[in-house]
Structure formats: C-alpha cells, structure tokens
Amino acid sequence: QVQLVESGGGLVQPGGSLRLSCAASGGIFSINSMGWYRQAPGKERELVATITSYSVTNYADSVKGRFTISRDNAKNTVYLQMNSLKPEDTAAYYCSALLRTIVGGSPEPSRRYWGQGTQVTVSS
Image (tube, rainbow, N blue to C red; front, side):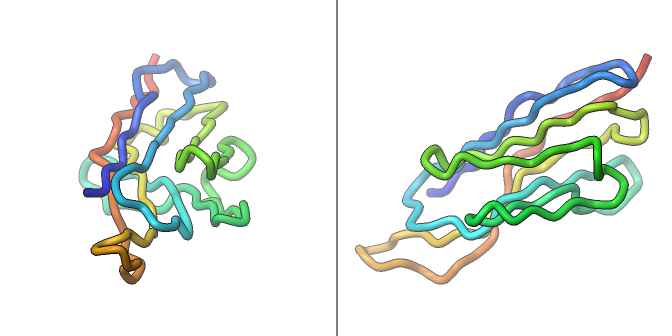
C-alpha cells in the first residue's frame, strides 16, 4: 500500500524558513511527478509546486523566488525549501505523487496519491 509521509512543518516567524520532506513507499513501480499543495482554513486546496521525474518544476506565482522544490529519485522523496515565509503562507501542506504501483507482478496505471498533511504556521 502506497504511503506518502510528510515531515518538517511547524511554527516560524515571518521571514523565516522551513523545509518540508515527503517520502513515498509501498509497492511503487515508477513515480511521474511529485508536488506540494496547500489549503488554508476556508479556502480551496491550491498548487504550490510540482516536479517531474526529469526535474522540470512548476511553481505558483505566489511562491516563485521564495520556495524551491527538489527531488531525490533514488529515495522517492520530494522536498520543499520555503524561505522568506509570510503569514499568508500559513496552511496545511499536502504532498502528492502521480505514480504507478506493482500489483501481481504487473504495473498498474498511474494514479494520484496524497499525504496526510503537515501544518505550516507563519506568525510572530
């Protein structure tokens, strides 16, 4: 069974930094893309950043120049380095992966999986 385990959230002052990690495990055949999404109270979940297996990245305009997404393919892990954090970055951050699993010796079609979320709070 696929698991995405996130870590690294917490409370930080405005202007500070945090680094989120997300490790995928469990019967994985291949991972296409991985990414981070966030959801603030009363708002819809939004894309923060994604990265493909070829390290092609995509960022929301609101985080460009402040956040950096990276990936360790050997470890099936994605990272999000968040610098110059602002109060409006406060949200639950969710890891997501588009991947294929092995079932009965054969790869299954790609589907999206989600982590349980980690809270990031930016406040003085």
